Amino acid sequence: MTYSEAIEQVMLHNGYFAPLKLIYREIWNYKDKTKIVGKTPDMTIQERVQRDSRFTRIGLGVYALTEYLDRLPKLETPKTKKAINERKHAAIQGMLLEIGNHQKDISDTYTNDKKWIFENKTLGSLATLQKVPLFTFEHIIKDSVSFADVIWFNERQFPQVIFEVEHSTDFRDAFIKFMELQDFQTRFYCVSDNNRREKFERERGKSAFSPIYDRVDFLTYEQVQNDYESAIKKKFIKY
Image (tube, rainbow, N blue to C red):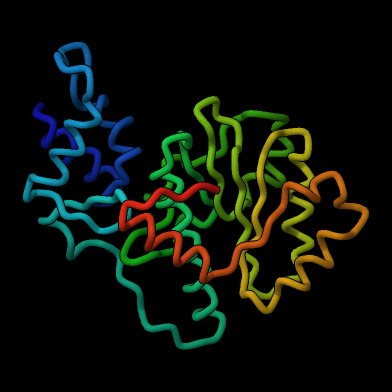
């Protein structure tokens, strides 16, 4: 297969689109890597998705099959407060997944909310992992970590950053999840409206969460949105 043909196959099996990070890995399921002469296949892949009319950019380092753009998932107009909140939640998660996929020191991304949609892209297909790697005791992953909103993993498959989007809760559940990983060098973020920062600080200040006090930070929806737009403009974002 040519590069473009192999890229097409990756996208077809991922819901008609794929982030570059997933293409870099999955393309070798369709193309023989042993016959590659050049030393920079990732650069070749980038060149193909950017210049071949068969592909259209639909996000931060995310490309789709031009022929199948009409098959991407569509969002209905939200009719309830719950639906509006879920759309906001999904949008923030989608941005964080795309930013994570764009980070050089991040190997993989994961989300629990695979069926939610961000700008015609299912979150499960934006993430490069469908399940959490077995980096610690299985019960911790099964009962806690696998329910995280967004996780960025390093190349050793350890969680480097975890994000919890908290629209209306008191942040306690997020902190309980974070505490499960207090023995790892993981950074934690709660993402919410700026007017909920005080509630976040009260929860962070509780003695039960003192082991991770200096490793948990607060991000506003606006900060994530601005960081996403900056990344699209090719400005480096670091969490």
